[in-house]
Amino acid sequence: MRRRLGVRRAAGATALTVTSTALAAALAIASPPVQPPDHGAPSTTPASQVAPPGQSGTTPGQTDTTPGQSGATAPGPPATAPGLSGTAPGVSGTAPGQAGTTPALAATPRGGEVTVALPGSRASVPLTAGMALPTGTVVDATKGSVQLPSPNGASPGVFKGGRFVVRETGGANPRTDLQLTGGDFAACPKPLAAAPAAVTRSALIATAASRSLGRHAVVRRLWGHDHHGRFSTSGRYAAAVVRGTTWLTEDRCDGTRVAVTQGAVAVRDTRRHRTVIVRAGHSYLVKR
Image (cartoon, rainbow, N blue to C red; front, side, top):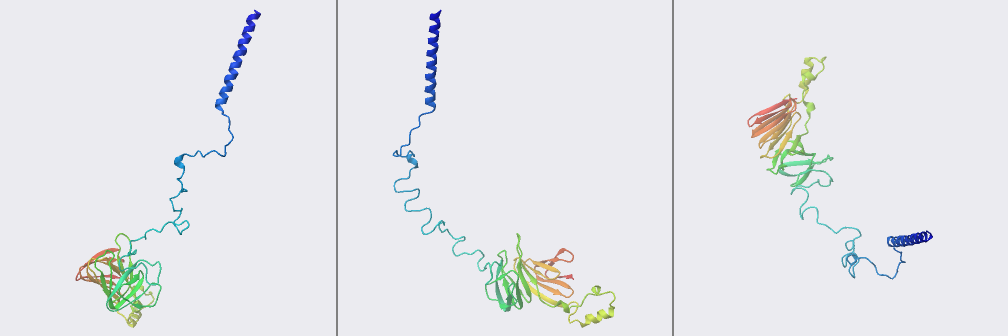
């Protein structure tokens, strides 16, 4: 009996020793010994990541910036093609001596005396060929005629016999609009309906007689001629959109009248809020 117990204890000790040895080996594999750094060892960076001799991350003879510049990019091509500006030929984006005023039209005098007053200025200067007229320019062609370009590139329009403010409308179908200006409507007789009720009819007649203009008198006018361009003329109570024609727009004491001698005009009646087509040989009066 004692002999068997001794054999069993010896076998258990042997098994315990084997188990401890196996556990130590497993720990050694999982945690390899740390070696001290070797300052003389070569770099372990792969050869594919090392720059060739004589280079330091850039092309030979080049730095990160263009020579003579610090952090700036190399000069690029101009925003537009050489010799071209941002506007159509003959039209400058701003008027002479002004900045940021757009758009501008290249006007040309066609005869007589034509003067212009640029926006913000009361001084009038003679119109010269190719002068850029920004929107809001007052053109006085009462003693001459002026030629203006059409926004759609069609034949230019010619206008004469009046004073107007030139503007360009936006949108998909832009137009060059000429708004009549000037004249003295104070000289026109007042309508009877506008007088106070206490005023007698005889007094109204006497007041109207003292006026220098009659009821149908023309205060200002403008003749226009174009060939399928995009132009319109505006009076106090009506606007005429032309369709390749010769037409007259006049502000009278009793309203705005549009007369057509050639072609057709679409007249916008601002009093009745409707559009009327007026053809050659006819006229249309929008009463005040």
